[in-house]
Image (tube, rainbow over all chains, first blue to last red; front, top):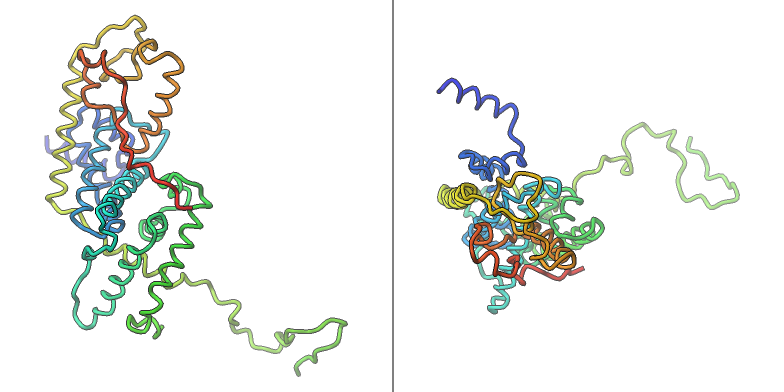
Length: 201
Length: 156
């Protein structure tokens, strides 16, 4: 009945169902749980995969596979072990690693894929688009673990303990990877500083 | 009048005329600013790829298909075992609820337990057929699907 739906929706907005509860609901056949989980988590999974792979089509494959694994693990979900978001980051990271290794095995050592978010802009915004493109390319050139750490820390905004869970390593290692990654980015961007307008700051 | 660098028996490196200066900020007291690279990275995150309707539809179709499998498994009567668990077994029988003897005893179980935790973290899961209580269930070695490629070496 419409009245009940509106009331339920209002309650949902005020008290969003926790992910762990959604997982149980989903595993037990609730028809709305998957949509809520997907709405919450698919954007982040896709964004992370896109950053790691620098390829929109491959990132979509990875995102779909990561969510598939979430659906499959629902009956065995362990809320005491991980948050859904952390778990998905880790699965996505592993899938990206796998895909990157496939790429290098196929001899595709040069990342020639077009950056996923290259945007031709008007003159006024061209410099900004160039910077974003340069930064994305510099990210793609980093060693994979450093790239992962920098993305999780400074683009996804995770804290170091969470990143450590995602990357299956220690907090100190995460800090080291982030620091090295940022030094690597600065080094790669340095030759292009004038061209990209950094020197005017 | 600026204080002279009095000789206190040590070499004075700093000018001690702060008291005579107006109380404006010095370079040492400027509040910390996030470095430009951090800001650029954060901005990059603002342009994150958004899932198209197509991808979302595929993801939800997957969800529905998997969920349908759970419903089918739940409606199948559970097979009674000699070591029937105290809790009512309403969920699909998972492989770790099997009688211990079939799992290779305690030794076998320890290996499976660690594989199960590892499996949880990398999104591995038993083959769908294991969730169904069928003939293949009893004759099959317990295998958790783990893709070798997913184990990567730490660079550091």
